[in-house]
Image (cartoon, rainbow, N blue to C red; front, side):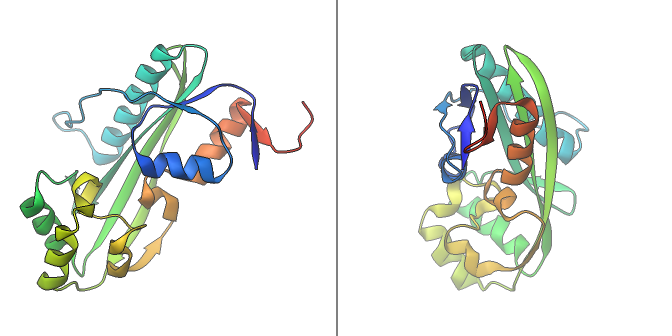
Length: 199
């Protein structure tokens, strides 16, 4: 669907983000960054996601200075509290129990950087409502191991799709990358073009 006009780097080891970018025909390299993900004191959830995305994009762009680097960070927010990746199975059960029959927000910050300079960044929010999920369902889901590397302890693109009653906003944002907004930013920078465009 798109032609890459400038080398692209994904500053993330997330297989979901790789799959989404590949889905729309983008070619890119992966440079996993080592950026601490702990929130700063008093940092709002949206600013936390944006800061980490900018830090990851900047670090990846320094590793590949001739490329435009994409950094992203996804968090789940319930009642103003950030739910990161579960520490273990018990933590995943606790998170999912809290999310059951409740609305929450999924925030993904993303940023594009080149040569260590951030060119743009944004935060995309999606509202997600879980149906009432039984303790037995939660335990069975956690036993699959799927929740352990995902913010909020669930993956909407996996088995946890059965828990999601409604979403308002970007579906791919909940998966881990707001594809429409990222593509618009790449188009704006001239890093990509629709397939078949004049050179």
